[in-house]
Amino acid sequence: MNERLNTFYETTLGRAYSCDSLALLRQLPDASIDLVLTSPPFALTKKKSYGNVSATSYWSWFEPFALEIWRVLKPRGSLVLEIGGSWKPGFPVRSLYNVEVLLNLTERSGLFYLAQEFFWHNPAKMPAPAQWVTIERIRVKDSVTPIWWLSKSMRPKASNRRVLRPYSKSMQNLLKNGYNKGKRPSGHDVSNKWGNKHKGSIPDNIIIASNTRSTDRYLDACRALNLQIHPARFVREVPEFFVKFATVRGDTVLDPFAGSNIVGEVCESLGREWISAEINSEYVYGSSFRFEGVGELVYALYQAGDAEHLLSLSSERESQ
Ligand SMILES: C[S@@+](CC[C@H](N)C(=O)[O-])C[C@H]1O[C@@H](n2cnc3c(N)ncnc32)[C@H](O)[C@@H]1O
Image 1: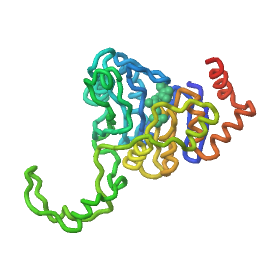
Image 2 (image 1 turned 180 degrees about the vertical axis):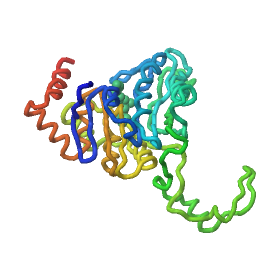
Image 3 (image 1 turned 30 degrees about the vertical axis):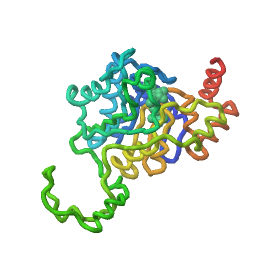
């Protein structure tokens, strides 16, 4: 029997663990989660401070997580996986490890279906690797990350009605003045139905969003306490889109590679229950400040010397 894991902090709707998420996943009941929304470490050649797995051993590292994620998902649940590509070490050509992951999760294992592929375009991405992009100028900025929306069944729970966008000016004009009816060169037959006004326009499978904020509760607290700000955070719009799209109020969302726990924050604000796991306790501590009053409580425990895990965190930092 596994030892029960303790939460690092809890909120009205969620609980955050500082642990290897494989240990947590193994303790979660079968078919208990509606959405797993996560961004695992990518197989980058330039390593991030939280560590990365190499492209060659990526699937053998990820497979045990994939099997557990499949087990804990409800039959109509989804796995939304943001997993970017990388470059082959020393060469200006791409590694296909993330495509391998997709094939292994779907066609080769029979575990998941690819419900749809999405792309996150972050216009603020740095031009890297510098050697190919800014020095030799033989590649362009890599500013799009694939997000695989995977499902256990062919009809996962989802509704684009929950993620409608405001109509653009030109669309508003079209709806007002009407479409020219008839066949288009694309083969589409534009009928009267095309002019029906709904509550907004159906979004594309491209999410355009950048991390341009320089201050918020999380950033301010990390700076004040000299905690490392997570270097690979989701932009809020990304988890917000999928939480709304694939779940309803009261559903449960899990992020097993939670980093700064923006997924938890989004869920809390949208009335979804959430569970997060992050192996680096410094990130978990910082993330507690996303939730009003929670970070302050953790801080007070830390000051009182009540939280052993927080004390070990401070000694880790001092020895660096
Ligand atoms: C790409 S980051 C996630 C960032 C997150 N989406 C955010 O917006 O802050 C991946 C995270 O996975 C964590 N990680 C790596 N292996 C882990 C494991 N076995 N269990 C839990 N967390 C892990 C890393 O420490 C890192 O913070």
